[in-house]
Image 1 (cartoon, one colour):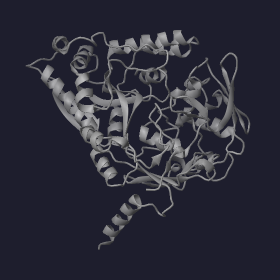
Image 2 (image 1 turned 120 degrees about the vertical axis):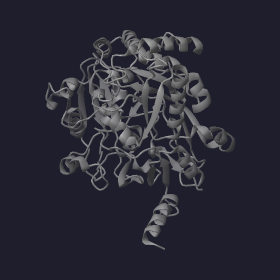
Image 3 (image 1 turned 30 degrees about the horizontal axis):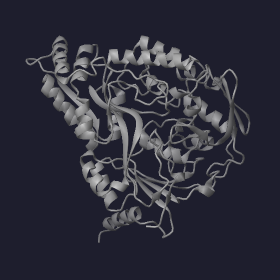
Image 4 (image 1 turned 90 degrees about the vertical axis):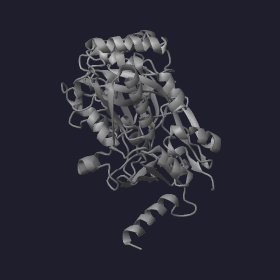
Amino acid sequence: MPRRSLLALAVLASLIHPARADEQVLRVGNESEPETLDPALCELNPDLQIDHELFEGLVTIGPSGEALPGQAESWAMSEDGLTYTFTLRPGLEWSNGAPVTAEDFAWSWRRTVDPKTGSKYAFPYYPILNAEEIVNGTAAPATLGVRAIDDRTLEVHLKAPTGFFLKLVGLPQFSPAYRPAVEQYGAQYTRAGNLIGNGAFTLTEWTPQSRVVVAKNPHYWDAGSVKLDKVVYLPIENQNEELKRYRAGELDVTYDVPTDQLDFVRADLPAELRITPWMGTYYLGFNLTRPPFKDNLKLRQAINLVIDREAIVAKITKAGETPAYGWVPPHVEGYRNQSFPWKDEPMAERIADARRLYAEAGYGPSNPLALELRYNTSENHKKIMIAVASMLKQALGIQVQLVNQEFKVFITARKAKTETQLFRDGWTADYPDANNFAELLLTGAGLNDPGYASPAYDALVHRAQLTIDPAARNALLEQAERQVLQDEPIAPVFNYALKRLVKPYVKGFTLNILGFYYARLVSLDPH
């Protein structure tokens, strides 16, 4: 047999069979190849899931979104809500045995907000004193409102009381990076062999387009309770392929379930199907920086009107998703969700209104819009995009060209804004608060892929971020959402539900409302 074939068989065998009989190896689908594992630069869910295992912040996030002790054993807040003092657990170590100190957190936070780092995810730091000014280049990183009082005590100063701050600190972006590795290896510090973490697992292999392997970290503060020896993450963008590999015994947990196979799965694998709420919104983004959507609100309105959200969740997604007519998803405590005023109109009336707006936007049967709709490779996304294209064609005569791209290429194009017109997007909450959605569409925000820029919207969100009273704060965020629904930089489609297949012998696998799980809580029964 050729050497290459023998090597391929060896790799396949290593995926399917553990190295030893008693070794606990969890094999999970993780959708896509990681873009980065640097906590300061991570922004995509597959990357963030791995970072949850490699690094640990001051707090971790529980099943309902609650803040739980992580590297910090306790914390205290000043009476005015402006100062948090975190006390680290005694004896914390990095995966190489070096001590974890409060200064590691302070240095890492300053690194994340430093414009030289290039983080697109620095905006969650904005509640911290001077963070926004540092990100915008008008203040030095050293002025960030954070300091290590001693090795175990971190003091954080906020610019205004922030009720969700503890939940923010549970984001992977607030995890510490090991300074000697960053300074020695630069952009390569998160590669296997270079990465030093403080989480329950450490990186042992990263084979591009094949797998990422993490192994139990013996230096983790709670290593004695970690049952798994390894976790193998497989980047499988095709859900049907992932299902085949799950049924063949190559996977213990899937990242998703193909929508066209849900009826089969419900009939044949009912005990293995997990469907849970997920705080997020699936939407289409309009590129507002170039034609045809720049300065053409009526065209955006027409497209929004003809998307039949009820049909999409009933006939395509079919896993508990709900139609979305607003930006912020349901179930945010104390928040009154906003929606388009035409939400309850019959589709016939909506289509009639859309045709009028389409004509006023300069298009019609003799001058149909030719439009590119871009999405990342996924059977589930493909079905939704085909349905949307059909709706636009039937209702308005829009000629839609579907363009699918590998995930990294798609993300790069979306951020560049030089080629995209209409594109698939989605946002799931990092922390359960409306601000997490509001800040995404601020002018110049790193993840504002539509290029939305509204001074009125920005002012409302910034006022809300500085408002102490929870009710008044939510009222401002509700007003900001109404501004988004008036300007229509996006077309919300549905609110998410999580669907995964989990083998019966996998114990302790619990997804929180933010869509993440902790492998340190998982174990495998004999099988």
